[in-house]
Length: 313
Image 1 (cartoon, rainbow, N blue to C red):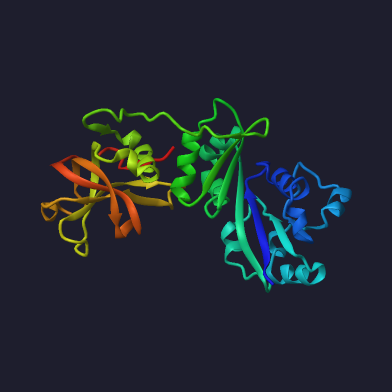
Image 2: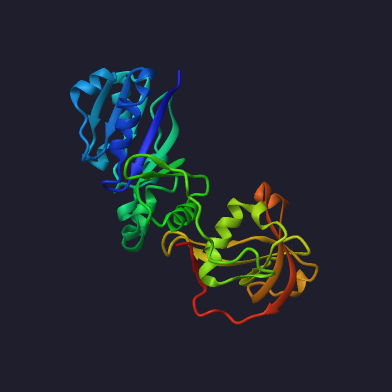
């Protein structure tokens, strides 16, 4: 019988313990049988012995990263015979170490949830970006808690989605309610005949078009781009895009959309252009489904910009 494992990650004091308590102690997950709760750090929220007993949960603390091993988890599985496992992962440990670890027999990671404190996330993005994003890159769900009316939800969402496209993102207000209004005002006017996409807005446009391709159906856009056109690319196709820093200097990725142009072969690979194109939402093998596809209307040579990178924040 499979034993479901729920992984809770997030940087220090981001609300992991509170989420576990809401899910296991106050929610209905305790009805699933005996729970093994593994804490890898001491959080602000404490678990009382009485409430653990009522939830049929056993708590084990593993504070040292070198002690968090496959062998240790196997010993705990034999000792406690759990029906499900909750793991509160340490916010300073490498997430890849857990994801690459061989879990005990029948243990199956079914969901990874990450928490973010909206009041400190911007500061961490500026000063400790790689460390905080380490906890989010593999999460199925990211819960941004302690939000208020001034929380830059669009900026946070782009930063996370640039690194983890599959993540579902939820915004929780300071009173614990879910904020359903996560729309952000775009910095460009979609009603313009030709939408000018600046370097500063490229990341916003790219992420919004990926998430809402139908919104851009038939829209004309103009932007500065680097040409990706290797010999293996199909005739009449190239990719105008930009290099983006998604997490840190070590995580620079080329981001752009497939573009159809009958004179694509005349555009040098890795050259700079200003392109005006019409956007369509259609099937493309590169997307494994439907997505934004550009149809070039005008392509002009351009000078390399002073800063070749674009940013999602």
